[in-house]
Length: 329
Image (cartoon, rainbow, N blue to C red; front, top):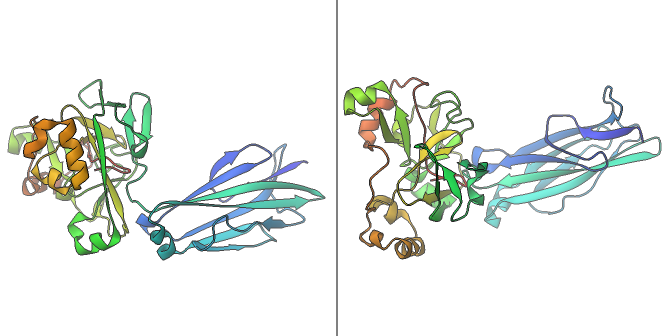
């Protein structure tokens, strides 16, 4: 066979010459509803792509009822439109797949299309470990995480809390804040970073030293809202906030930006579910009073104080944000 069919519209993916896999991600949290693609035949020795002379055949979706797949056997195009209500009713992320076969001159080649449908806004946020950046949901107790102050620290406890659509509607103050790539300086974050409104961002700014006598301060994300690069995510259908706890309050690297670890003060402890609070107290009996006995890694500003730095803040000179994530809180 002198050709291989390939997705030519720019999908992420790849594979072997005999069975390629093309992966698309559809994030309900950012309002995505549709995935489209286009297959052509590509000569193995190189050259321009063209349509398979005998057309294409598509299999059905491996799961039915989560959306509609429309295909064209003549030009190899396809469109998937998600059924948001059906996916949200499952309560979890979903993975769909189908195959496409292109035929020319009696030969054929089959590829697989995978569609990952994400419900949670924060899932997939990358945390820097000693072995590189990994999604927060893959971290486990004991994993060493790189720290802003040098070296690494092992995770002592991981917690999470999912806020569903009805709770977000009833309590809009729980909606996540989306910090655009580069909003806190070059490469900080290197991708959009989603955090809870109370999650504190580490800022380096001459105004901090002028106003508060500190070169670096922690500021709640909601203090930085500017309706441009830092916004409330009103499209989020659901969010899962993750908490990483160390032996002391640490600054980590989240999506390339320095971020604070979980600091169990009265507000943070109150927001945890009862089983998570109980687990924390078992691990750290000193938390039975509801307040962390260790100091914050940097001076923490109140929301109104943070706004003094957030307004008129230049893109450069900022150091980071953080609340861990499956995404992160």
